[in-house]
Amino acid sequence: MRRVTATALLTACSLPAFAALQQGVTAPEFTAQASLAGKEFTFKLKDALKKGPVVVYFYPSAFTGGCNLQAHTFAENIDKFKAAGASIIGVSEDSITRLNAFSADPQYCAGKLPVASDADGKIAKSYDSKVFEGRPGMKDTRGVDIDHGFAERTTFVVTPDGKVAATIGGMQMSPQDNVAKSLETVQQLAAQKSGKAGG
Image (cartoon, rainbow, N blue to C red; front, side, top):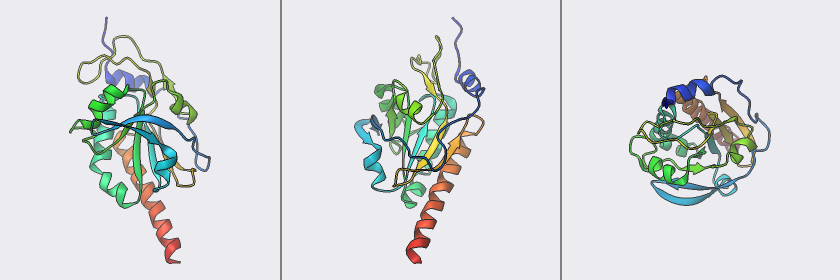
């Protein structure tokens, strides 16, 4: 059987038009099994928002080219997000077992970036992110079978009041640009908050 590569996956996912929850709407709350540095925990968006804005980013699959790059770029910039008072959670249909490895991998999440399992795609669908079925024979960058579906690469910046401040994505946007735009948004939110406090 012919192997379907991550590049083919990204190409296939880029065909439909980008559509997702837009700025100003209420972000659906969710609770999910997640992993940070290989250790499992329960992520609750409601709790995370009590501490500041949350960057909720959906991605197709751990251990695939663009997703590896996006996770690495988020991890490299994690201190800048923290300085803006924001936290990050990656969400995919990967199993928690795959995410334990991904979250700890020094090349990608590097123990800095938490990622959550949305095995049935319900969380992605609640955010109106497109979800695609996997194809037989798909392999990740390690050569391991990918046995799950895929969410379109879409990032939502959610403010503490539960509103979507920005929707960033579509497969046409590069992983690096996705991260850069997310950082720009949380820094703008921090600046606005600081300005209001100073006023």
